[in-house]
Image (tube, rainbow, N blue to C red):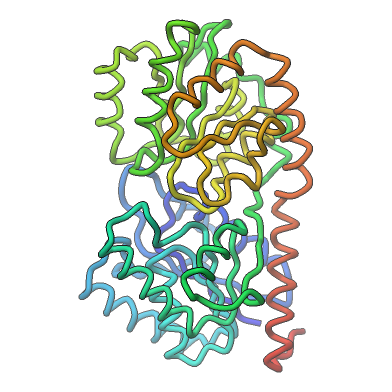
Length: 390
């Protein structure tokens, strides 16, 4: 059975790592022939295209498949995707991310692909954007939803959001948690040399912040919380893990708040290095305002670190209050500060929350479990449409 995945870009990020793991994992099944189409991946976030350097023919780049709305390029991308699907005749097209999700599904429908799956890694509409943009993206998702066979979502919250917007029916949604190499996080390398290299002292309380330096990720809120924390925890430091277009602005804000010595910018960190960097922290704060279920949360828990998260989308599916961490109302910086203080002053609490998080993640977030779920969904949908699978 021929399966084509489509994603807007292959930058360093959770949705992209999920997609790559899916493509590589599914290719191990002799019943599947799997390839990937992506747009270009420029910018400071880093590219994962090199993953396929030794796998000729697996990755196809469509230059016009860009993230911003661009009517001319979008039209060309739609035509090129349609042409590819008509030539290669996949039985399944499986799309990821907003732009590729819309154009990929419409192109698949034009090419008469029998099974069209969309994977929701995060909402493409909601209160995080202006009214006009929200109206346009909601309408686009409804339109593409009419040709969608099935939806996969990394959090149940995404199914609720899309159903509330009139997109699909409940039986069309399946939660598939975003798997990663859990074992490398359960047993991370010794982080002492890294801490020393980053200028972190043995007694410093380190708050990890994982994510692209981009809007809606909560970097500014965390800076405010740590400034309020310093009078009581003067050795607190933030370790920013990731890069992005807002780096200079966040550095400027850190200086304006007098946090130059308390903000450490690690820059772009490759996925395979993430266990080491998380191990260098004492907790992880994820104050994003928009995501389905950020893999920063389960990865932190897998490393035994408690988490503090805003109550966005699917965060409460892994950040369980006083069990694996603390869930805070979005924008409540004062409570974030209080929770950080609580964790800084109570190493036993950190260990308890981290241990419980490890136990939960080790069972639910393996790549093998994710691949098995996707394979079963493919088989079930294929059988329902009379497609024979070897």
